[in-house]
Length: 474
Length: 166
Image (cartoon, rainbow over all chains, first blue to last red):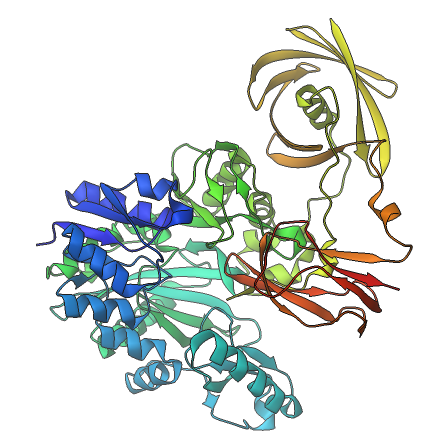
């Protein structure tokens, strides 16, 4: 029986987890670091404890023991997919809400994951240790221990392979302490489709359908939806069965995600397995009615999954937009500041998983994801209209955001057609900028009404965008 | 009625506007146009104003001379014109180029030394912010005239890091 759970995370996901715990009557204990001492998530818990770093597994377990929490929920990111927290919990006799350490380890090693999946009959892309046949180019060099685009290189021709492998190995060694790389067939117009799976300790595994996550910048998803416009009922059944086979192959426990690449011909290939709750899990919750966090907690307590495959239905359509503190017009550079005005959208079918409020500081210390705006509507077209309306209503001033950029993607013809792939943003560079046009006189009036009579001080000046290269995740 | 004149910098031009207002509304004078407006409501960060019978909701955030305006679902950025402002370019020899921090963050590496000749787009330094890193590139070919930062240093947005001269 779980009485108190330590949430080893921050921001919107820590708050989202605490919501379910409070509804379940389980005490929610939180963590905060010095830069987060006034953060919203600290105040959303039944109690919160100061730590040095969200990345120190031993410190987290020590706090759990001291505060009497008998389980730890890692959220996503930070230590959720590192074996250090799950094994430290195990040693201390604390329940880790997630899969077994061995599952995290084997799925974190891309080569081992490929081997296990192949043995379970899951389709994988052709791969090589070195020198693929010239006919297979372009190819992708990938880090064995990697993710998030780190240690990844696209190689167009054989003569460029050696340099690319050396560079990828160097980057992977720095980022993951594992310099191993391998070569995989490159899919030119890929869609990113993932399947939500849930497994329990009684050997049951079900899938909760797909999420399409093809709209990405810097290899990170920014818009996700379900159902995917590319997935027919037949393909859904096939991919669902494949995902369940993949999860069964590693005796998967808890909520997990099997990621696939869907090529232009509609063939799917295993990409990787995320052994945690996904950022984009709300779209699945909106269309199936499942509370995935509740399910995670129940499974960790040893209960069987509370539904059968045949009980699950997809109802309507859901879209999620990730609200980042960043400037799309300037290479998506992250921005910092204090939120002075915060008026989020409301209304039927609108959900906001949010880590900030008026007065919150967005600092350089953590990821610039502030909130996730999720909508539900009976059809995809209605969900698009609802998302447009909600983004239009979202006022957030004090830090630059991607809200208008998201609105331009959602309103684009490509998005409406459902003809998505991971290069949509690169192809539609015009979407990065506000449409050119004169400043409305009403905006000039609004600024003039609010401006103080005297000019005070020079505006700060900083260098042009072209002095910066692209931002990379570290 | 009280009146005031303001200057905005729009597309490099100094644009003068004049507001004559009472508590209920007033007249906005811009170029040859005289636009009457009525307040529906006002609050700390903006309000609701009626122009030509159409209501517009707005929020405005001031940061020194910069104004961010949210109006009807879109955001605009406006700068106050400041005629007395010493031009930054004037402080520098002609052709010099200042590389400043785009973001508050930490300097990871400096790839050049004072006196080095650099090519356009050559990496000068690498900085990290919010779990991301980026390279600072030379905006033009030239020679490194000065370096004002060191690896590991925390820098503020706009802080001068490197000067390149032609």
